[in-house]
Image 1 (spheres, rainbow, N blue to C red):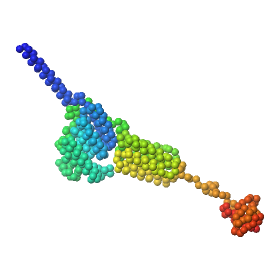
Image 2 (image 1 turned 90 degrees about the horizontal axis):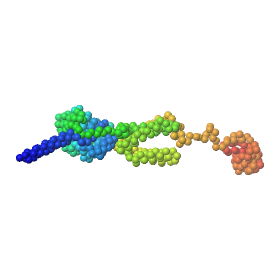
Image 3 (image 1 turned 90 degrees about the vertical axis):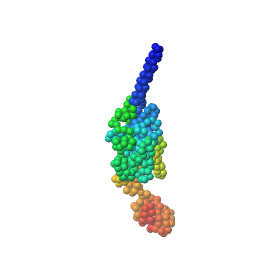
Image 4 (image 1 turned 135 degrees about the vertical axis):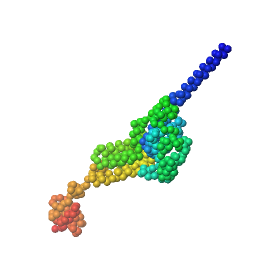
Length: 441
């Protein structure tokens, strides 16, 4: 009987230890101890610089073995192409993702959120208003709107959400008056409405509360921040900044052509051009081929000053324009930016030509300004008006031209038309340039 009691005690002890171990394991699993969470901000305009940043950070999260990625979103939207590329990055992730909308996820921002597994919202946040708007503030064409509508609904369906509300965010013809989105208005969801339509899993006031809701309170959190270069690149690739940079580059270089030496205008133009390519290179938009083409174009333009013909200059200008298109994120936007810069260059050229002319700057080296005028001392041959009235003797017969001696000077002369034999006395009656007319005495 004694041994049975001992066995009972041992079994009971084992059960109790197993229970406590399981309980501790469950608690650790619930609070995320030992897990790695990456927090990536999605802020300001959605553009290609943000795309490059998110690509870098998600790659780093994968390499570091992250268990969860949280995207803290506060954006008014931005470029559709950049949003679509970001969505592809998110869809390809094998890590659980959560969007935490801290303030607003509008337009392209809502599309990014719909491509994550979970959505949580701050009590004051909003989500939606995703109609496609062109840069001039007008609605995009029907083809672009249709493609964007499909992208929105597909993103919602991919994460098990009702596509109706995603469609209403992008299509103003859908009538949802119960959510203040009657026909003619895009849907924008409040946090309560987002939870109601099962687009958001919950409403949280700060990141700590979000981590608790996700069961990651004690997880190791890595906060991601753009590097200084990425921050600069995002600014320089902004659709508003690009035409300004190109206009400054064209203006500076045009003014430099009319200025003696190389000074502030030329430096300003080169800096603007360098900043354009630097921003697009860091953002991953411009490769080395674009920079090589740019340098080739500049070299050809410089060579044009030493090689006549104009062909090298035209090829150089074409190379520079080609490099700009290669570096640009969008062909249409780059075309508009180059057109604006070209217009600025034309206006500056006209103003400077009228005020300065071509007597200064680079043009003074390539334009011939000297003239061989009489006022400057240039004559084709001395005009011998002093010979009129002089008498002399013919040396050769004049038929009607020949040679004579006048005042001890041997000269070519011509008679008035009649023949004059040699050794005959003559008199100068007229001088017309180099033509000395004589008459027999």
